[in-house]
Picture 1 (cartoon, each protein chain N blue to C red):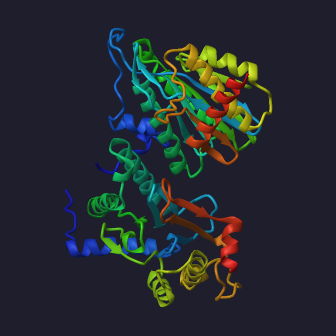
Picture 2: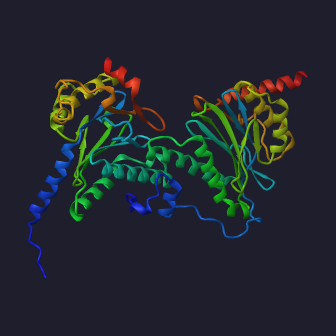
Picture 3: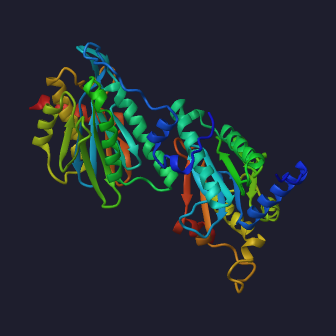
Length: 239
Length: 261
């Protein structure tokens, strides 16, 4: 019988964290900003069909970066959780905080007990009646929950993007300027420019067909999630 | 409540009802006959096709045997953005069916990132009605009307169902519930193809008024308490409920025209 090699727990956790971080940093980033009209979520995404940002419930949205199949599973689990909770209790009892805790539990569990940690970072966000009541939970691959306010950036080179956004950010931003600023900031990531087209100028701002944009509209009764795409998005970006 | 996760082979997909079953939350079926039990019944609902859409209407009365159990229940609901459902039959299971149906459509849309087609919605409702058949045989029959604006073919479409889940698409109009015979006749006489929604709202209002005169289980307009039938139009703009004050005005116009004749 062979004995397994002893691996110190510190080393094991570090290896797993490195593995997950590597996977996540390869992906393209996304940013969420709390503004006048609600919460704007803006992701760099060249696919028209594989979504990174999605509706969970009336005032709650989900966004993920990293491995698509993994965060899509989490997205669907979140929708199921929210719909079952709304069915069992009432629509107003569905909130972002309890969902974020559930996600954290699942991610933490997978991180320590499974062969491979999930290579994802997710955002669960809920729009409130005012800017101060907006909630943004940024959940990491190991189940760490960060409660953030104003701005959140997920994915590769998120510090660079967050710094860039923070420079000009105002809670009183209106939709067009927020979309413009988010597109600008996302374009400053390294990942964007290390891709296929090496001839592209390095300072090009992402266009309407490279962005996935959605808004959780403030003060709307019922389902507040709306996508901004196609012509409407192009018009916002031009301004 | 924990996060529902499934192994790939057990995954319920975008089906909310299957998800509830997997979670053990599906409503139980009655196991004995309930003929002696007087359960609440929702009564007359109508739907009329008009130019570019469908008008739906339902009175506000619910009965239990010979008693009026509620005088202001609602029987016409939005199902999706572009569709509506009206119910007749046992009120409890009917409300539950409406709620599940609404959630099913919303759940599908969120999971799949696109709304279910109108055809798909009509078939889904057919399955729900059919699943209710054992309960229907025990006295809890639910028979809905389903109408919607088909965004793919850009027409209003109208479906009626029987207790077995049979789905019948109607070209002109449909009525369900205790007063359906009278309501159907009034609508048949006043119906014109491609009439405006406005004209067909008037026709629906008049049909419910006439039915209330003939059928005890159908409630007419209550001018004293300000209770009026629920009327909605499903068109290219989606499901829109007609304002109560507008419905009241139409009733007063109808009564005035009857006085003059």
